[in-house]
Length: 253
Image (tube, rainbow, N blue to C red):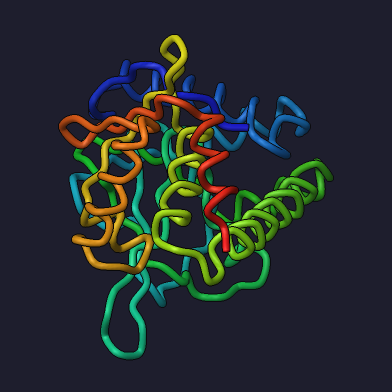
């Protein structure tokens, strides 16, 4: 699975920084579900024949309803996802950080991309692996097709788990499970605590949880008063992972 990203150049404007970004991209793929079992030649082709793109803050990689015939790997930085509802309201869905890959559903069925996907910070670097390249490589390496299957299954299972945890639950429980998931995916262990290395705002949390910023602020304060988390300058630290999980389980309806 994806691992925390090492330090990388802020962009890919020079040959040296492009070489560095491609080396990092290959290292990520070698540890990513499915890709880790592909032939070395497959990974080499994806990294060398893919193209790098650097996004500025809030710049879109793809908009909801657009074609997206490619897989994309986050090499540096992170992406946010939002979805517009029929009533015009836009809801944040999730975020993906360095080492994460996207694009599997359109790759599998040719559908349009379901989310607005944009950079959370300037200097976000993406490796684009075109659909034509994927289709050329699949007959040569059955592991690449298996990768798409495994990634789709992983995402479906994670969706079911989220629905099971959040259905009918209070904002405090939903927030606790969200922070646990982020700590596991984006966390850096520091002693007995886990720092969520991706910074986020209360507005982002309110969009992801589908509640007002005030309710998110109240829920965060409750978890802080319980000694489970600490926040400072948009950085959140889980002080007690087991305690946060216990809190979520004990308060589940």
